[in-house]
Amino acid sequence: MQKTTVVVIGGGATGVGILRDLCMRGVDAILLEQQDLAYGTSSRYHGLLHSGGRYAVKDAEAGKECIEENTILRKIGRHCVEQTEGFFARTHLDDEAFEGKWVEACAKVGIPTIPISVEEALRLEPNLSPKIKSVYRVPDAAIDGFRMVWQNVASARKYGGRVLTYTTVIGIEQSNNQVVGIKVRNTLTGEVSNIACDFIVSAAGSWAGEIAALAGINVNVQPDRGTLIAFNHRITSRIVNRLRPASDGDIFVPHGSITILGTTSASVNKPDDTVPNAKEVVELLNIGEALFEDIRSYRMLRAFAGTRPLYSADPNATGRGASRGFVTLDHAHDGLKGFVSVVGGKFTTYRLMAEKVTDLVCGYLNVKTPCRTAVENLVEDTSPALMAKARLYFPAYGAELAASRLGSEGLEKVIARIQEKPEKRQLLCECENVTMAEVEEAAADSTSYMISDVRRKTRMGMGTCQGAFCTFRSVGAVDANGLSWGKDTNVLFKEFLQGRWKGIRPILWGNVMREMELTRGIYEGTLNINGAIDNEGI
Image (cartoon, rainbow, N blue to C red):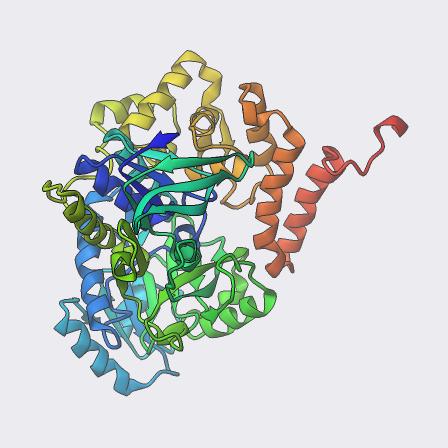
C-alpha cells in the first residue's frame, strides 16, 4: 500500500497547482486524476487569461483577483502565455450606459482601461465590425491550459511530487472522524487499492460534490456547461470582449494560428456532459457577428464544451447568477478532520486557490515554509546555447514551439533522441510542428496510455487537419517503439479519431464535411480500421 501525507484529487489547474505548492514546501503528496491531466475543465475553455474586466461590475473581488494573478502568471508561466492584450468593444447593439459603469468598476479594482478611437481599433484589428461604437485596451492575454498544467506537474516532480492518472476515488477511509486513507480504482485495469494519508484535498472541479458525497458530506457544486468554437484562422491578434454584462458568445481569443469563440452557459446534471450540439454552434455564430460581421466566412475546425464548477451556498443560484469566486471548505466543520474541498474559481486564479488551500493544510501539518509559487518560474528559461542547438534539428519556428512546450529539460531529452537517431526529427504533425522524437518522449511518460494523452502533451492533431495525417504517423511511431500500451494499433486509431469526431460532428457542413470525408477515406477506405472490407475477398 502506498503512503503519503496529502492526497490531492483532480488533475486540472487547481489540483496540479496545489501539488506543486505542497511539494515546494516539503510536504509529501500524490495527485490522483480519473482521466488524463487537463482532460476536464482546464482544457475545455477559451484560454483567456482574464484581466478581470469581465467581472469588475458584478463581482469586484473576482475582478481584483484576476488582475493580480494575471500579473503573476505572465511572469512565472511566460512560456504558456501569449501577451496579446485585449479589447473591450461596445457594439451598436449594446447599452451605452453600461460603458461608464464598467470603466468606473475597473478603476476601483485596479484594472487599467485605455480608450482608443474606433479608427485606431480598426487599424489594429481590421476584421472588427465597422459598426462598433467604442473600444478600450486591457491587459488580457491568451494562455495554453494544457501547457500550464503540464509545466506545473514538471515543477512538482522536481520537488518529489507523484501523479497517478486514470485513477478514480471510490472511498474515503476514516477513523474517529479523522481521514486515514483513500480507496481508488485504476480505470484501465479495474485494480482496487488503498493509499494511506493524513489529509485529502478535493480539487475535483465539477466532480467535487461527488467526491464529498463519498464521505457523507454535501457540497453544492452546480456543473455549468460552456460550448466554444475553434476557427482555423487568426481572426484577431488580440482578445476581443464585448462590452456589455457577461453573456453568451462575448469573447474571441487567438491561439497560435486559430481563434476560439465562446462561450455559452447552461446548467447540466452531469459534470461530464461535454458534448456540444449544432444549435449551440449556430447561436454562437449569430451572437459573434456583432463583433466580426464576416465570421461565417471563416472555416471552423471543431466545437467543444466543458463544465464550470460553480459553487454557491445558495442551491438556487445557477449559471451566470453564481459567483466566479472560489471557496475553501474545511470539512472539519462537518465532522471529518483532514478533508478539504476547494470549489468555484476560474483558471486565471488557480495559483491563488492553490496557495490558500496549501496554507490551510500546512497550518494543520505545522509546516512553516512560506509559499513561493508567485515568484518561482514553472520551468527554467531555455538558454541561448540550447536554443542554438535546437535550431540545428528543428525548423526555426518549430524550435521556439518545442522549447515553449517542453521547457529546457524536456527539450534536451528530445534533442538527445534526434542526435541518436537523426530520422526522428521528422515532423509527424505539420500543423503544430511536432517531431517524432517529441511524440516518443511524450508517449514514454508514465501518465501516457493512449494517443490522446500524447495529444494533450504535444498539441498533435489539434491543428488544421484534425488528425487526418498525424494519426497514422503517431500510431506507427508508438507501435515501432514497443510501448506496452501501444500494441493494439486498431484501438489506438479508433480512440484518437473518435475524440476528433466528437468536436467535428456539431459543425458538419461545407468545407468541414469535405475534410471529414477525406479523413474517412484514409482510415476506412485505405486502412480499413473498421474492418468493413473482407481481406479474404481481396
